[in-house]
Image (cartoon, rainbow, N blue to C red; front, side, top):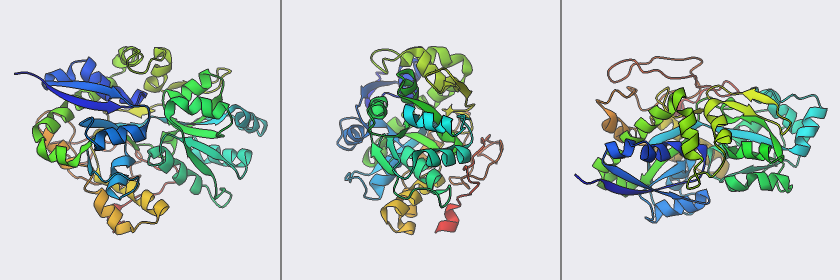
Length: 392
């Protein structure tokens, strides 16, 4: 039987790895699929490519399909999330001049403590902090807002969040257009390599199990193509499992470094996969275990509660009605399709579609469909717990 071609879009980032590995390592072929991978220069162009049918599937910032469901961003095409492609994987960095002010104040870039890093940043930057993010509807913007607003009354209320495409982040901070940034790897490390800035904090220090990128399709496509949707979910699940094996890191970095994908040195890309970072141009080393996740802890499962946390943040920032936002978001992450596609494969399938976000302090084994499912630590930096049922 011949393979089916699926045009799929991505932005050149380390966390595009599941799509690229699915095609390069044969996991798509196992499902009789050929992924025609199309790079996009920005998240807005990739969103439009998917909405208007230029591709049938796309790596997507987790908040984009939810924003579309809430009528934000000017795209009316309903989008569905088939799986989570990656959790975490972002870094927060500062310009070289801001890094010097932090050092002069005695801050030593611990790279793990969100409270001390945030307070040091606010004190060193003053009231006019400008932070670059890749897109207005992104986990970068939501995590930054949640973090800075949670640090207390000294937080400047008018800190500016500006949109900068990931490959241009180092240039923007070097030219003084922004003071800090939150971006997916390897573009934070590239800012360090180019002497433009230093890394302050991994995004996982704010939320230790944040859904970062998802596999999105048009809602109508998901309904019309249940067989293709299932084959796509299984191919990406196998790719995520391969990427989670430490023995795969070297080869994964080599594949991603190819000119047709990221076109960057494999050594830079491997930092995110290993969690071992160079955080200053002078060579200061820091480690962030579990910096990015592709598989462990049922990482691919699209929890409705994840979508509803994002929806609540968007509603608060955009003046939308909370209950309506929560209801619409719960329909975007298709845990039902994910469960149907992977039943019988041995994949971790939680018994519920929603959970308390931020409530897991250590590895937990809740009841799954057939046996225990391992979930990893899931904590917000301020210890809060999000209960979607309590918000309705």
